[in-house]
Length: 155
Image 1 (cartoon, helix red, strand yellow):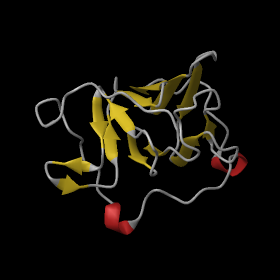
Image 2 (cartoon, one colour):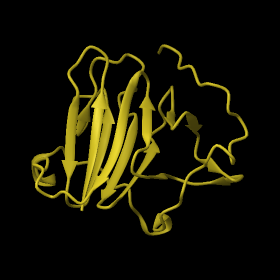
Image 3 (cartoon, rainbow, N blue to C red):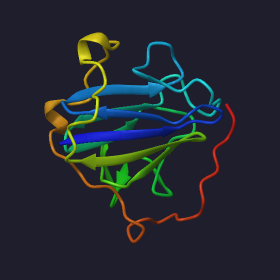
């Protein structure tokens, strides 16, 4: 199994990253991020943490100014009046960070070239801890209490 994330960043060519083994990555503008998104001023330095363990993938907001939007619904860490640390993603989900779109694909195709091993990436704190060991599905349109379009603000 493999997880592919397609990054559509303003004024930059599309990037496809494929992960075939478990890894924790940080996405943001900082030079220390595993996945750096430089051309989007709406992205925080440390915007989102992503835990990948194919075929599973989960995301959490790292205190960004503009948050995370998943399939058109802002994810604020609350699902059914319960605070959760991260949101499980599914095949076909689209995540918006600032003006950057991240599309998720979960595939059986392991012939794709994987990204470099974790040892060659910037070391970050793991997103997984024993108090957050379960994968929790996120809100659906039916669960959402606020379905108004989300418009990010400039930082």
